[in-house]
Image (cartoon, rainbow, N blue to C red):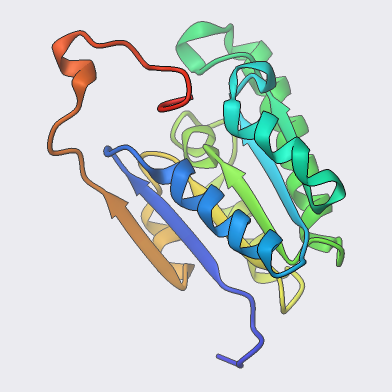
Length: 174
């Protein structure tokens, strides 16, 4: 691997923190004066506090959110259209030299529910701009994606307050 080669990073697993880790990398990139492009699958933009915070960085970060909830909250046809639009945006960002880091948040869910084909994702990642860093998040990353990633982190849930009936809290989980 060349010194300036962009990395493919995968954050997966059943534990909390996949998107948080990706957004931490985004903050570091912004701190270096670089731009970040974020595509969110299945997420509603108005609900995400982090996305509202990113707006404060002006043109250093752009977030594209596609969907109003996860697969069990919308008809399959509605999700399929949102995923197709999200993936189209991902491919644009992979070609765009203005964004050295792109994050595809919850893309693994789109793969798990067969809205996208893993082989297509892998092929497109292999053809990306050489210096482009890509972070992919979500539970259940497929083995073929793990194989081509330069870094794989699996988040493991040991304990979570949701199991005790504590709902997600604004500013902590969203």
